[in-house]
Amino acid sequence: MFRFAHPDYLWLLLLIPAIIAFYIFTLIKRRNDLKRYGDPELLAQFMPDVSNNKPLIKFYLELTALALMIVVLAGPQFGSKLETVKKQGVEIMIALDVSNSMLARDIAPSRLEKSKQMLSRLVDQLQNDKVGLIVFAGDAFTQLPITSDYVSAKMFLSSISPKMVSIQGTSIGAAINLAARSFTPNEASDKAIVVITDGENHEGNAVEAAAAAYAKGIKVNVIGIGSPQGAPVPDDSGNSNSFRKDREGNVVVSKLNEEMAKEIAQAGHGLYVRADNTNSALKALSDEVKGMNKTELESRVYSDYDDRFQTIAWIILVILLIDVFVLDRKNSVLRKIKLF
Image (cartoon, rainbow, N blue to C red; front, top):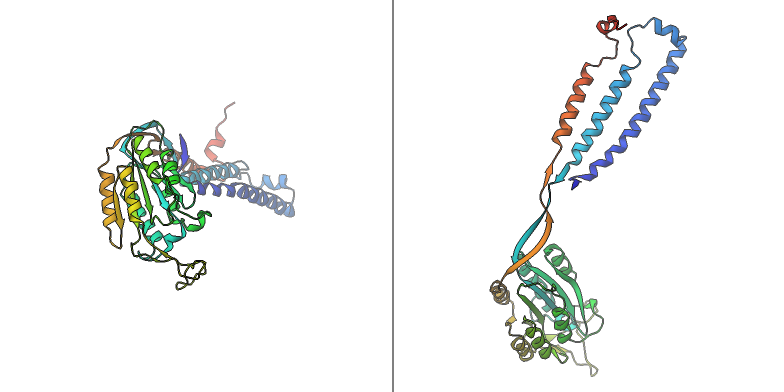
């Protein structure tokens, strides 16, 4: 497997045609200048030591050295082989509630932002594990399929907002069912679903979905986000003091449905913990993940690439040494040698 470590430097090779064109231009100009002084063939008899071929040879040597130097800058590398790397880990599907009620600020800076911060720190703690991300409100969608690419996981996590799901509600059952279908098929590693929700406007069948997931060997953990006392839900105006109102004009107050969250966790034989303004929920979730049985996850990756610029560098050195000894004038010693 061959590649360049810094392929952008190869754009410098576009200088080569420009240099050749400039060299041809100077040759033509030089010949035209000589014609002003007389017949070029006649003038050549007065300059017997001037070589017509050696300047051309030096030009090609120097041009070749320049091209090879650009290749060296680009960093040619070879991968020795394709090897199998075996890792011990688990699989986790995260189902994050993105309904409007998650914008309530009884948890600072808001329920949704607190959830994203907690999940980001959880991803930072993962090692050799696989993680996926589902967002849900009135419906559930896969935001990130199960993967070991933590950079992508954090990138997708940071972009989450309630606008991603147009249908409002809290369809936890749909999210659990989708998460249960999203794990790697036939993988023997432990699997778990982490649901983060306030349970507001909860729709039915979540407990049944958690029980069905556990029947497949998948634990369902629930993080309750919010407070039982609740908080008003900001509207779309952008004003921090403007809140959603019901049909009677009353401010909508969203409360954590903790009893429902506990029932889901119990049916899924998983952990329930309520998130607050401390890191207790993150610690409890991290301990739960660490306690899962890690099994062998196998993936194929290329081995490290080896730099192979040394050979080209030696060729450049030889070319430059030859260039030093190639003079513009004819060699008086070699000119005396008569082969025939």
